[in-house]
Image (tube, rainbow, N blue to C red; front, side):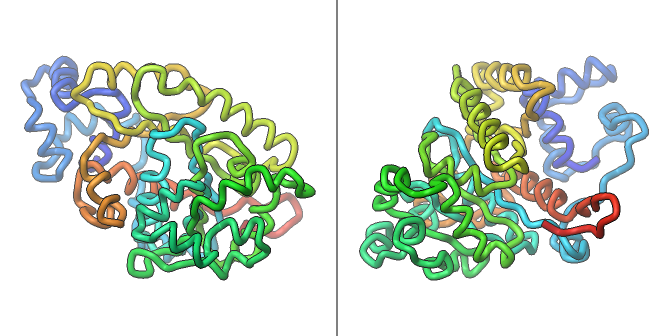
Length: 349
């Protein structure tokens, strides 16, 4: 068991390091403390065999770590469009989309990030000026309403690590203008089709509502990631989003699936955050999986202000590990062989 696996297991339990140490002591009759757990998780000290044996599922083989090398060696892989969505604002959608895009690119995957929010938060986060994007007509509005090809607005970011389709306030007009379009929910999907084969992953940062821009993103996607802040009543809007996803699956996109609910801005030291995480996990148990939480950290705001992803600014920071782990899990999904239909050769989507 690695330190990262131990940390992920502890966070899934909703415990801080001290609480986790107390639980281990009760199970093993030991006297571990918070600092010992911290050394295990950081890799500064080897995890004792009896602890690893207690925590490992019986008979479970050790999974090979996902690295840039293993992704490159995997051969043909499926291509995925992932929407980061929640109609509630302030839950970490843009932080998630930007950091996940960078983490995926660090694994050797070709990535496109689409800023689907008229507020242009992902555009600002990556150091671009939405005002200039608007003035030059090089934002997503020019694609969904102006007839420009998506390829014409793409910008390399983070030193060319991945590409960005930027946005600006002009995109807000598309909400009402798209209503007059035939098959108005499929406009973005049609535009993405022109470039999709060039990218292993397309990440779409959705606006904080369930309007036509979000509907377009969901109709164009294979997977949905739902960030939810760990606070009182944090998940109230999620059932409506899940209902919308179910409708889109029935009507236009049967391949759409929820990748998971991602708790964000979590502090293991706060009793309320622990309670909220347990409530989210219990509510969706057996229906939609809840991923390990993203810790609350000032690093995210500082990196955003500097126009770069936090995981690029400080890849070793504990706060960004959740995004690195999430990227590895998504990369493993992408690299998994696509099962062939009976009588047909395997096809990579």
